[in-house]
Picture (cartoon, rainbow, N blue to C red):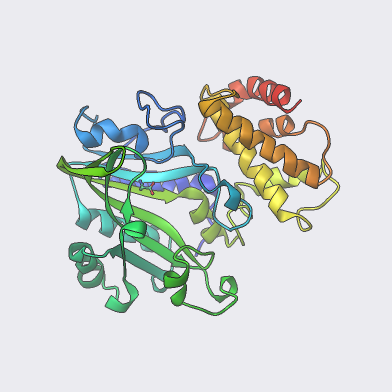
Length: 360
Ligand code: SER
């Protein structure tokens, strides 16, 4: 397997989806526009909700994006596991009443095995309990043996996040090998932990056919007028698999930030990986959020960002950094990401100033 860099991989995905008739759109802002159910954009599909529900007409019925996302629900896991982060880029392809399960599954397989070159024997799909249609596509059309396709319930194979389009999903897991399975549980890990550092979920293909209305004490699922596809693949996870990093952080997406932080600290990355990983993750989150117009505050979105920055500063103290330092990493983050996010350099001084003020 060739060790592609992050910029290459991102582009390979978008080019692939373009070749399948998708309109490649730029990432939307992290600050939700006209969606009161979210403080920050948390999935590739989130800014596209009106296209799924039919409230707005999409520029094309097939769209693909690399969407900036922030999720803080798992913040305590950042740095502990190989795969959690609060900021991530989600590669996605979307169908608004156009193609459905068959194409979505076939293309995900084609991209992972033929374009990227992942070993098919290390990939495991899962489907929603009753979804025989998805099971049969994996089994009969793609040729995955039945005992390597897992069926899981609503908890794992039904995707919904707040209000809006949702539905059963099919996930693809990549087996990183025994090295990440100290107890030698093998496939049993799926049933014991579901998500773990050996079998990493690399792609979630959601069959968005319902609209979820979270009422106060019960949820309502209404059939959407059209059947849709919403897929999401975390770029950081894919990069870490392809570059063979022990974690997402041991890749060209994070290591330069970690090395720059080492120069400011008196404890090395080897000695306190967790602290370095938290700092590298959180500075990306804050930089991207501020670049999109969010600001530190005592409530709402701004409070989320304030907590994230403070958390990073606390970890800075663990590695011997006593003075403000996060602001100093902002130009590096902007420089590393500017090829795809070309607006970052012009915002970097402003972001740096705001971060320094907040740190102090
Ligand atoms: N909405 C799904 C997710 O975020 C697939 O894009 O995982």
